[in-house]
Image (cartoon, rainbow, N blue to C red):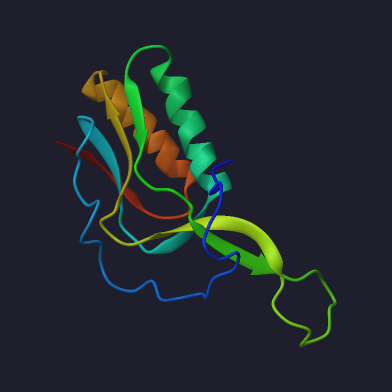
Length: 134
């Protein structure tokens, strides 16, 4: 699973996730891409599930780029813990996805294979995504 090797601060604030993506909003590396249509915190597990599906379709041909990385730590406390006593331990890492952000890119395969692979990966993700061509 994807997570940072080290970070400046172990825990972070929740922060906002409003607005639309002004960066990473076009296909840069490959020929085809999967673009998010909604905002969400996408966990590293969900990202990995999408990557596995794409890899299965591509087999040995083609190249895959994961355009997002889960930098943000999310903390949680165990069940039935009383209020107070500080912030919980880091549970997992997420990436803040905004509408219009490119999640995956592919190159070196036909359009039909890329569309099938990326739409299969979109089914693994909890948001609406759209297939785009460079």
